[in-house]
Image (cartoon, rainbow over all chains, first blue to last red; front, side):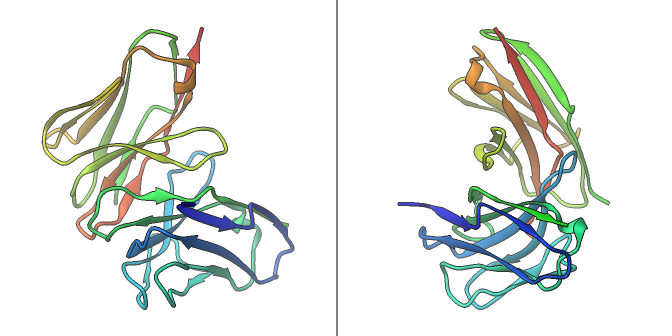
Length: 113
Length: 109
């Protein structure tokens, strides 16, 4: 069982380009999350999904979009990347939004030049 | 606004005990988490407190005082593999987590 996988592991991107970060979980968890982690700051929630077919905005949603067509996949898209989106991106999931433990993927390190 | 404070960095000796504090000021509270994150890796769950008091799990214990907006993580019998960042997070009324910046723990032999 893989848990949560993310792709790519790392990426260097030119500003203005479109990029989709992929996230897949095999735990049949209902809730999924996208965070960014920047040095000196805590994890910040970008978008979340409490169940397939629904999504919501987190603390820092601007410049990002998500979709949740099925239970397993939760891609994050940067429509037109900017240097301030340089960060490490973590996808996470939990059994339900009210459940305690969130399981994290290995992360994607994104650099926007 | 929401605020979670943790020390940026702490140093301790192998075999010793260390206490990592977390104070929070949030508009809601549905529990407090501690996660461990090794450098370059994903956070992993350590503990969850929703009621006041101490929760013990092996070498790790976590304490919560809701009236004081305070929690600590206690690590006993420190091992070199405990060198990591420790993240405190508060679960809000909407079930979303607000995270502290983390405490980097350095273990010296």
